[in-house]
Image (tube, rainbow, N blue to C red):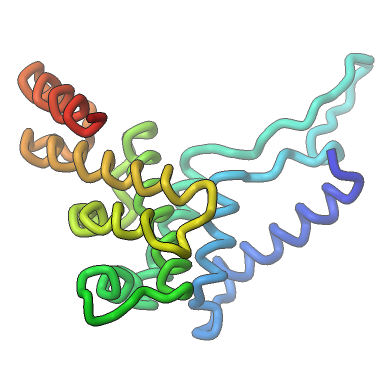
Length: 204
């Protein structure tokens, strides 16, 4: 563990608390959304002094993650609302939908954030059973995924992976909606068979 882990955790906690409890219009930025995404996916471990109890047990204590699905959902929900306030859901796809505008590095950065919002939100919905924080339609985002991943500025190791995840999100979301089960937890045999066929086709 980093020797300054506790101090770094305190700084992150303060930053997230400020975004949650005392936000201002100047906080509605892409960087704020990145901070919230980071926090939702990699919540710090409990500091040793927070986890200590009075007992005589000499066994060594190990840090444990503070992650829980309710906390992750709350933080992701805030990130999604910041994205809405920025109009990210309306503006981010436009440069990838026309040949008249070449996507810039700034457009690529925004798309990375948007794709992470979509995939994290959908993953949490499936694993926890919670409703989506905000119902962003992934269909158009998925159509732009290959354009995004093939762009010269999409060189991060995760760019191809997140593009594939967005396509999978759209595929599963389509099946869920066609079955009338937006939670994805009560899909019938016919829907599951159709989904498996579409997944096989996607892999090709």
